[in-house]
Image: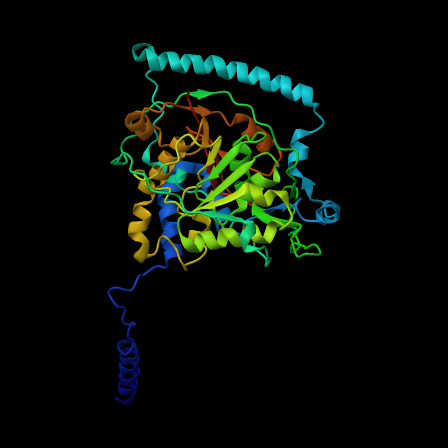
Length: 450
């Protein structure tokens, strides 16, 4: 009997221990997953089928720290000795290594050959526009999965800022005027069935632009940027993907450039360091972003530099199609549109676009991007780096567009061993991978036909 009671007592004790365990109460409004976890689930669902076998490698790259290039600030007094220090560490001059020792006359002959081909292709395109019945029925529209990846572009901040001073009068500030314009309704389905013709394109790599990169697989980090006697840094760190849109612009001497979403300013500074544009208009609408942009220019552009006079700061809403009034005003337009910032989304919860409070903002991204790109095409005289707002500008504004091939850029950057690209119907897509881990960054160059 006692043995039985003892066993019964043991059994009851074990049973009671299980019953006293309670699960913590979770409010119905509390998310079960963090925004970064939701972002990763979202990318697994959409990007997994899109990238196939590449996705595990890309996924690991997104979750790992990205790598940087060192952009030499040739406006700093001490950039040359600091450039030598980085060279001694093993960092190569990326663009010089791509250019090699090819003579200028050989490069020019190749450019002329490519542009002759491009002219022939342009004539065919114009003939197809004039005689639509003879045009090809090829369809270059993008499916939903491809559009999802194309909406993902820049990763972390373009450069790491450091303190600096510049007189307030040295930078121009202008708020654009308002002019009534055509009110265009954009549904998101305008691109269905749109054919975008493509032609050959030749790119020069600016000789004055100095960019240092460690070789593939080298795990060294660049030291903190050094400063000259007046406190101007001799270089800054830039995600490798952010270099390509500026190269794709194909800047030429005395070009006028509009950077539509310029903050934090890395790409505008790159353009200035090429010593090619005569005017760089940096536009952003939010005052906080304009402040960030101005601080960057004050940090990296010395007060006595001639480049100070090239910069014009504007505050205009680049997504307002109705009030936008800068038509055919610039030689080149750069539109780095707002995106889901994939790398940031999977690594931090603060300000994450996949948070519950930002759901509507995320859903509105395609519409916002399209409006900005429509205005980018309307602002350019003949060229723009944009994604795809071709259908809207054709149907509503009568603007015909041709895509410029980025085959040369993709080929050279792939050969450097530092970049990996994923094939896309339009443009080029840099995808992360551990040996260098740049991007993601989507680039597409469109030209407005005259």
